[in-house]
Image (cartoon, rainbow, N blue to C red; front, side, top):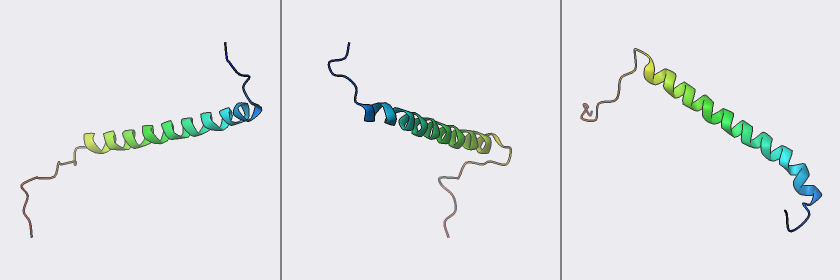
Length: 54
């Protein structure tokens, strides 16, 4: 049971907040998918930490 009645502004903003949250989650999934595709490709090689320096 809520102590105070929820204000109308909070009700209207909840839809916007959900939209922003879904957009952020979709962006994170996209970045993760692109990273996994790059790392699992056959041409990917980790950079050599002791590599040649010019």
